[in-house]
Image (cartoon, rainbow over all chains, first blue to last red; front, side, top):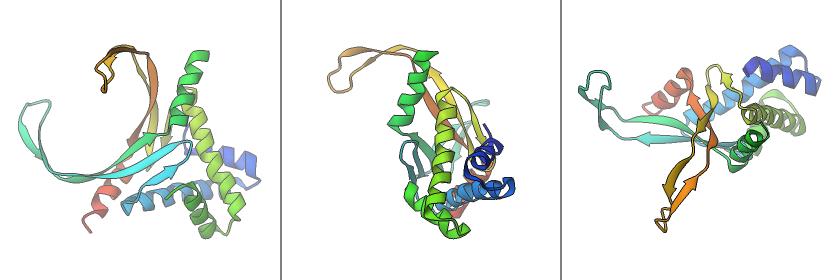
Length: 96
Length: 95
């Protein structure tokens, strides 16, 4: 599934034109990106939480050369799936 | 931000009614959840991708009691952040 499939779903079910549907889907992801960029988390009930975390500097290794390097502090984005989503993914497994 | 705040923000920027905006936000996350439930993959350019990973059965321990337990095979959704968003999240911190 890509953004184009989401646009198609919105187009088929809402009565908006394809162009409008594409703009609205784009807007939803833009709003999410802007929110996460501010360091704010997003909680979508039934789907999961997108959480921004600060990581401090740590020592690591280049896995290919074994060379020791310093990994700089950074801010990362993580996704924690909701229990509802995890359950529904595992239920369909039983059917298949 | 929770789902209703996302709906409000979407309505505010597009002149959509709250109801329409809510319908669209629900439609997006419901169809994403349905795709993952079927084991499908989602790729949203500029945002990230979701895949379902299979985990085999293994013998683990109950961390509270130390008791050995058989953990059944399971599937979990996994999100990989896209390059654009990864950089935006990280670089915004410095400004």
